[in-house]
Image (cartoon, rainbow, N blue to C red; front, side, top):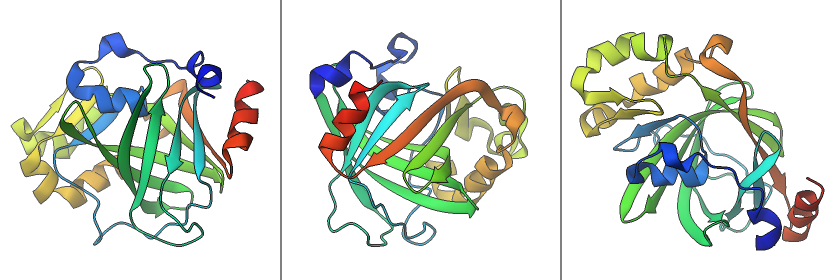
Length: 216
């Protein structure tokens, strides 16, 4: 399995400092990082994850895969635990996810985990195509993302570089609702980079996942 997957992994590692290792391992794309949880039990939705294994593809190249550790499945929960496998460097990392439904087939996805002794909490807009198929489209950090009223309001409590929007602890804890609205406001075709996306495909068994890899 590892040899089959490893040759497909694609990352832009050289572009990221070590602080953003968690981003690299999970999705090698622009991200929204928060210092404190924006989604918790009070505002996340109960979700049913019917598949144990999820393959992550970058434009049809396998980048990594997730294994959900919670059982039983087919049970609605607000918090799900997973392992993500970085097979190129033979590394596994544990994490959690929460989802908030914004509208039909559009969700905000929060994931957290530890890398090199540091916790990372990331937010992504995610789109459901089928029960076993989701997409994360890479957004541009130009124009609307930088000029949104929330960014101006928070001032030094938010920083934007070439690949990351980072809200500090003050912003994350006191403006969580506004951050969610910010992501919702940014859901416009012009704010996504054409052709840049991650496809997340679910499989019930490891053997099914393996077969799908071999056909890439």
